[in-house]
Length: 156
Image 1: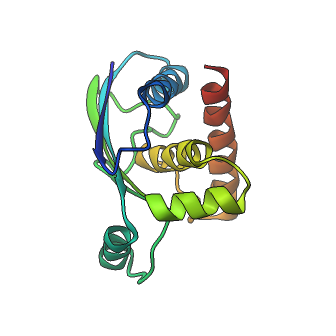
Image 2 (image 1 turned 90 degrees about the vertical axis):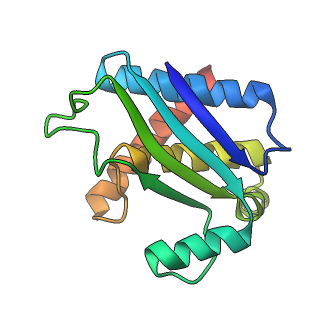
């Protein structure tokens, strides 16, 4: 079971999109960790002022960014890649800046929801322990996993 707590500027989100996001993340968890799990995640859509403030406070970067993730656990994966022995978990928070998402969508010639799902997946992977900023190898690993999750989304 998955519960997504949607917060903030939600006027652009359609129910079908939200349901597809939910099914995608749930499918990824079940395929990756080979077990059913009850979990929750908060996804907030905010403005540039808020994300800049959070980025400055938590990352010491005084600028707006596209997505920030605040995991509850440092990593949910063990050394073998299996999910740490829990059945219910709150993964944490994903915060996405609506204006930056819109700007990046225009820059990549895609629609808002296509960019938004990419940012949600990126934030989600940070919540479960991926970090592209650690090394080139970790960056490649995370990009490959982003593509895998995007494929789940596109096929659903």
